[in-house]
Length: 296
Image 1 (cartoon, one colour):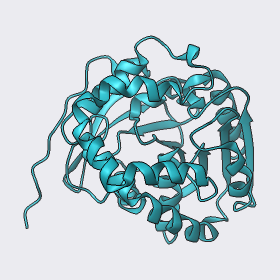
Image 2 (cartoon, helix red, strand yellow; image 1 turned 180 degrees about the horizontal axis):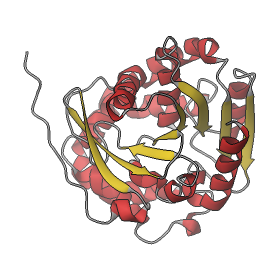
Image 3 (cartoon, rainbow, N blue to C red; image 1 turned 180 degrees about the vertical axis):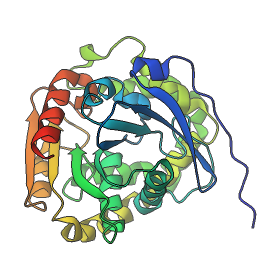
């Protein structure tokens, strides 16, 4: 059976420059993956959350690029990567990102993941156990099995009735995104001008919202599978970063998750919400640079 046609996208001018990065594109098993690259040094792979894309890391890439070659892809079906049929489970997206590493020549890397992206990078580590290309994990407010309130919210949006309504609301979703985005910050007054609009633009691209709904439908089973995987990746050094005001994935789940990684450290950034890397980037970058230096 032939692959369904894809929608190839061109990002607006200036997004890469805003991050101090160069605009790149890779073909990964027929899927065009748009990514940003900056800096020199050991590879550092940044995986964004559910409604994000490489824009999420615009305040971090230049700083981290002083000590690493930083890669920030738009996950398939999001940002300005191709809209196409893909396995939307944690494992399906993790496999695409492992193949992305092959295609762009990343032999080993420290891998950072936020929220949904955190679950993806833990799954990447599990799927890559034989090759062991993931040297260290940085989990930023990651989806995890110890956050039942978050799982209940996802289950609500993934229910047949609600997911159908979300699909019907796709044309206006980019205009309502600002309300939900503000809830991701510990202090919404820290949202920079233009941020909500830049996040909302890719949501209006045909195929984006159905892709997100497909991810939500896999979510509950994926979290159970992730829980089973944690013992298999427990030997990987890990840094966990949380915002103290995170209402999406509660900080109370941080310590139970950390206990799965004997060689790990948990850092809570005071007053930050679910996106500490862009809400308080100076503090986040300081923590990251310290981790990359001491773990080298």
